[in-house]
Length: 308
Image (cartoon, rainbow, N blue to C red; front, side):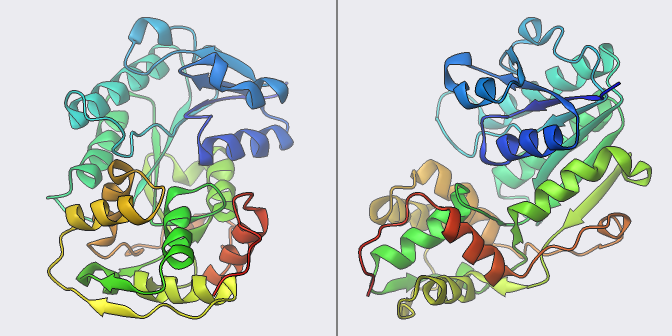
């Protein structure tokens, strides 16, 4: 009998790809979506859909029935200003954890972020989400990743837009912080393998690609991949992440509310500091440049007009 997986956040960049990957491995996939009208592709693939918001515990009832593993891929990425962001994150995680435990789900898998910066409410909220899932739910596998490179990821889109749209750019201090990007295929490989890696139950798994780079270096490599000249940068070391997010909102289509948590995540080192969890998996992420070329090849937004 096929095992069943529940994926929350299935309409997102990671969730949609994970659903397809698990189905290819003969899993039955149930997708938790807030609005059925926004999930036509998932329906077309034949996935079972359960309409519910994680903030509504009554609507969640039944989502975990018959589920072996539940993936929690929900986060707001700074969208919307109404209410308390951190409180909503905490409540959603607790509702999901309690539902999965009550309905007999065997394990929960969560994807959070690398880096530790207490003054960043977004990184702090992701860490707290993992704690809540672990405290109130079934055994947890807590993956932590830095920038995920793939067509459709906000981090990748921001990087591409900056290079494509600006002949030169400001250079705040956070451009020099080390980060360890990972291609989307590597992330999906780790997530998909987790249910079959018993030793990953109840532990943190830090994942990253083979390259440790600064954001400035990634901008240069994006220019190389696009076949354009590398953009000069004017040092402005004192500009804050908040001001940087507003600036990115002005020069790219990326919402400042989305850009801010991305930049805050880059304002502190986001590298793997403990590889023991990843060593449990037979996954070998590809180099950054290969992941970048793959993303560009799959990117439907790439403008065919020549770059300079």
